[in-house]
Length: 128
Image (cartoon, rainbow, N blue to C red):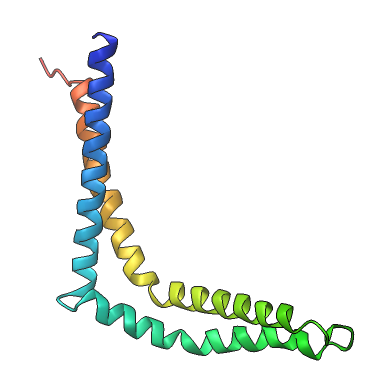
Protein backbone atom coordinates (compact mmCIF):
# COMPACT_ATOMS: atom_id res chain seq x y z
CA UNK A 1 0.00 0.00 0.00
CA UNK A 2 1.45 3.35 -0.99
CA UNK A 3 1.47 6.43 1.19
CA UNK A 4 -1.35 7.99 -0.83
CA UNK A 5 -3.53 4.90 -0.46
CA UNK A 6 -2.73 4.66 3.24
CA UNK A 7 -3.68 8.30 3.77
CA UNK A 8 -6.93 7.80 1.86
CA UNK A 9 -7.70 4.68 3.85
CA UNK A 10 -7.08 6.47 7.16
CA UNK A 11 -9.20 9.44 6.11
CA UNK A 12 -12.04 7.13 5.10
CA UNK A 13 -11.79 5.29 8.42
CA UNK A 14 -11.85 8.59 10.31
CA UNK A 15 -14.88 9.71 8.32
CA UNK A 16 -16.66 6.44 9.14
CA UNK A 17 -15.85 6.88 12.84
CA UNK A 18 -17.24 10.42 12.87
CA UNK A 19 -20.39 9.39 11.01
CA UNK A 20 -21.00 6.48 13.36
CA UNK A 21 -20.41 8.72 16.39
CA UNK A 22 -22.91 11.29 15.17
CA UNK A 23 -25.43 8.56 14.33
CA UNK A 24 -24.93 7.11 17.80
CA UNK A 25 -25.50 10.50 19.42
CA UNK A 26 -28.75 10.91 17.52
CA UNK A 27 -29.89 7.40 18.35
CA UNK A 28 -29.10 7.85 22.04
CA UNK A 29 -30.94 11.17 22.12
CA UNK A 30 -34.01 9.67 20.47
CA UNK A 31 -33.98 6.65 22.80
CA UNK A 32 -33.78 8.85 25.88
CA UNK A 33 -36.36 11.42 24.81
CA UNK A 34 -38.93 8.84 23.66
CA UNK A 35 -40.76 11.25 21.38
CA UNK A 36 -40.47 14.37 23.55
CA UNK A 37 -39.01 17.44 21.87
CA UNK A 38 -35.44 18.18 22.90
CA UNK A 39 -36.24 21.85 23.50
CA UNK A 40 -38.88 20.92 26.09
CA UNK A 41 -36.42 18.80 28.05
CA UNK A 42 -33.72 21.48 27.91
CA UNK A 43 -36.12 24.23 29.02
CA UNK A 44 -37.32 22.10 31.93
CA UNK A 45 -33.71 21.45 32.97
CA UNK A 46 -32.83 25.14 32.68
CA UNK A 47 -35.78 26.14 34.86
CA UNK A 48 -34.80 23.57 37.46
CA UNK A 49 -31.28 25.04 37.44
CA UNK A 50 -32.38 28.56 38.37
CA UNK A 51 -32.29 27.88 42.12
CA UNK A 52 -28.56 27.11 42.05
CA UNK A 53 -28.04 30.06 39.72
CA UNK A 54 -29.50 32.36 42.36
CA UNK A 55 -27.46 30.66 45.07
CA UNK A 56 -24.28 31.22 43.05
CA UNK A 57 -25.19 34.88 42.55
CA UNK A 58 -25.74 35.30 46.27
CA UNK A 59 -22.41 33.65 47.01
CA UNK A 60 -20.75 36.19 44.72
CA UNK A 61 -22.55 39.06 46.47
CA UNK A 62 -21.14 37.96 49.82
CA UNK A 63 -17.92 39.64 48.74
CA UNK A 64 -19.66 42.99 49.20
CA UNK A 65 -20.10 42.35 52.91
CA UNK A 66 -16.42 41.81 53.59
CA UNK A 67 -15.26 44.89 55.56
CA UNK A 68 -12.12 45.64 53.52
CA UNK A 69 -13.80 45.19 50.13
CA UNK A 70 -16.80 47.54 50.20
CA UNK A 71 -15.42 50.03 47.70
CA UNK A 72 -15.16 47.50 44.85
CA UNK A 73 -18.74 47.26 43.56
CA UNK A 74 -17.68 46.30 40.02
CA UNK A 75 -15.67 43.32 41.30
CA UNK A 76 -18.58 42.29 43.51
CA UNK A 77 -20.92 42.28 40.52
CA UNK A 78 -18.36 40.32 38.50
CA UNK A 79 -18.07 37.75 41.31
CA UNK A 80 -21.84 37.49 41.40
CA UNK A 81 -21.97 36.85 37.65
CA UNK A 82 -19.25 34.23 37.88
CA UNK A 83 -21.03 32.55 40.79
CA UNK A 84 -24.34 32.47 38.96
CA UNK A 85 -22.68 31.10 35.83
CA UNK A 86 -20.97 28.32 37.79
CA UNK A 87 -24.22 27.54 39.61
CA UNK A 88 -26.22 27.35 36.40
CA UNK A 89 -23.62 25.28 34.56
CA UNK A 90 -23.31 22.81 37.40
CA UNK A 91 -27.05 22.41 37.91
CA UNK A 92 -27.83 22.18 34.19
CA UNK A 93 -25.12 19.57 33.71
CA UNK A 94 -26.52 17.57 36.60
CA UNK A 95 -30.10 17.79 35.32
CA UNK A 96 -29.16 16.64 31.81
CA UNK A 97 -26.73 13.90 32.86
CA UNK A 98 -29.10 11.06 31.92
CA UNK A 99 -29.48 12.44 28.40
CA UNK A 100 -25.72 12.89 28.03
CA UNK A 101 -25.11 9.37 29.34
CA UNK A 102 -27.55 7.85 26.87
CA UNK A 103 -26.05 9.77 23.97
CA UNK A 104 -22.48 8.92 24.96
CA UNK A 105 -23.19 5.23 25.47
CA UNK A 106 -24.89 4.94 22.10
CA UNK A 107 -22.07 6.80 20.32
CA UNK A 108 -19.44 4.54 21.88
CA UNK A 109 -21.38 1.45 20.80
CA UNK A 110 -21.67 2.69 17.23
CA UNK A 111 -18.01 3.66 17.05
CA UNK A 112 -16.93 0.33 18.55
CA UNK A 113 -18.77 -1.50 15.80
CA UNK A 114 -16.91 0.54 13.16
CA UNK A 115 -13.56 -0.05 14.90
CA UNK A 116 -14.22 -3.78 15.11
CA UNK A 117 -15.09 -3.91 11.42
CA UNK A 118 -11.95 -1.95 10.56
CA UNK A 119 -9.83 -4.35 12.59
CA UNK A 120 -11.43 -7.36 10.87
CA UNK A 121 -10.78 -5.78 7.47
CA UNK A 122 -7.09 -5.38 8.32
CA UNK A 123 -6.76 -8.76 10.06
CA UNK A 124 -8.99 -11.21 8.23
CA UNK A 125 -9.70 -14.45 10.03
CA UNK A 126 -8.96 -17.49 7.90
CA UNK A 127 -10.71 -20.59 9.19
CA UNK A 128 -9.29 -22.87 6.52
